[in-house]
Length: 242
Image 1 (tube, rainbow, N blue to C red):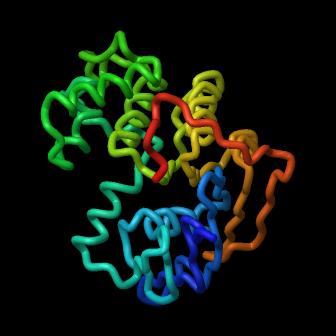
Image 2: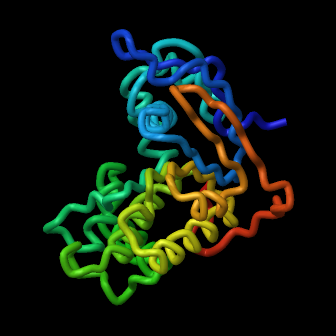
């Protein structure tokens, strides 16, 4: 039986005398859609930083697709991030002077993908998120929802198994937020695992699991058992979700 995509046991992160994350043990299966909730300071961002290999735990263990992340070198962590994990933030974090196409190309450039293949992949992803007519537009020429679509396309560039989304609808109106969540749902149905921080209960209910944190600890978990586990791949992510 294949291991869970994410397995943590006693995962702890301390900063001086503050325990930001307190002995968290959880499994996240491939294809899960998980919402992470809790008040400010509850450990949500710390968890995301650790799962995204942006920081190291003080103690405990973390395995990603069977790899013991806690023993990886910095170079190995960077390679894992670049190949396996896509990030989407509340603010799209796009390069302000670069076009949508150039923004999506960036991870592929770092991955040393040939120019022609890079442009073709970026165009395909932007078309898949509904922005084929906005390839040459800079972020200032795009709406907030369009900027998030570019950010999602960029997160998908290297075919990640996992997308980490931190308040991806927090800066959007409710209609645009719903459209972005529809896109996440489509990606999840294709087999991509999504872990999303949100303060919005309505948004959280779009996930099939909700993890609730308080004072650095995982205090409760809910699962929507009525959700189908059937996964249908779509052209957008063909060959992804490794």
